[in-house]
Image (cartoon, rainbow, N blue to C red; front, side, top):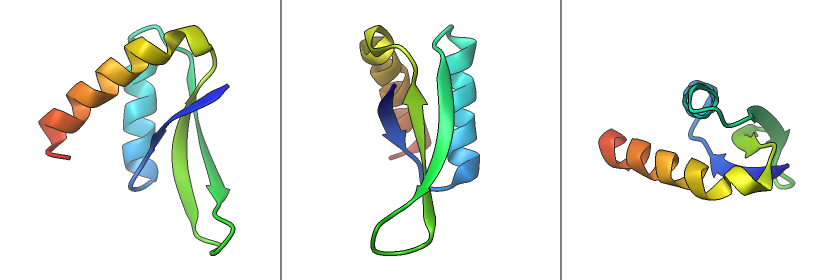
Amino acid sequence: MREIYVARNVVDAKFVCEMLLDAGIQAVVRADPMPVTTKPYPSVYIVQDADAERARELIDEYQLKDGD
């Protein structure tokens, strides 16, 4: 399992995760607390490392459309 995206919030993380799942990439959302604070920062993880390149392409396209 590999972290592929750190989201701004849970809604953003779930959207990216669903986008990857729709593309056939197994993904999950995790919200682990950061060591300095107790506020969770949600991240999207892919299950298969082999999907990393395609997942990055999709996320990059999403961020361009989203204005990030």
